[in-house]
Length: 303
Image 1 (spheres, rainbow, N blue to C red):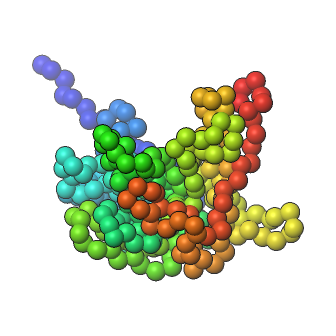
Image 2: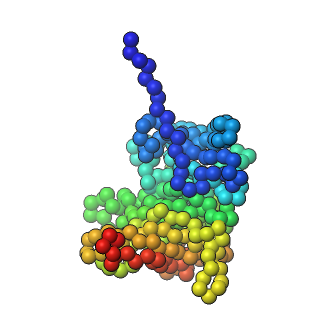
């Protein structure tokens, strides 16, 4: 008589903001299989450790997966990655095909980051997938990492025109206004926040410079920013890892920081390039935003 097979379930905590603000509940996603790195979960749950009570908060449908949940530091709304519903061969879960989902304590959901795949592009909407969404210390803004669908297609296309590579970058969604996109692509969708990129990468960083080819592992600096050398407060800033090039081909990871505008409306002011990007260029940071390098480890024996 063969033993019955046992289904393996993996409960996955995110590496930040997995506790409720009152420290009473843990939020996590539920994945199947032994390998927790495979993104195939369909449930977001919360656990009350003291009583052991578990509650399912959200269950995705229509072939979509969800996971990597974090909690607001000021209330019980949560945010997590949501994959595409009705996935097919042309549009299934990937770095470029995902978005954020906010779930409020009363059960209402909203998608913060709008997606606009084909021209005309719209400021406040992105053209790809967001990942690891984290609320700022006041619970108002959301940071995430981003990959661009359009640039990924060009990366894979023979004889593609000169273009930005699809490199991971850092973005923020701010509660300025909803963004309503056109419906000339079936995967376009609206967003309840205004979304922009705030980091800058280049295709081929100049060796031994501060140019980077990847921005990732972002975190909000402080609960309410930090104090500048002149004594003023920078209210919102994001630190992240950036990959630089040294000795022509060696990748070294350093810490970078980007200061964000205090006023939410300033996030919508374009700089030298369009916030929404172009068919061959990724969305550009708002005016006045510039990343700077914080660590210098390349002269060490083990950078």
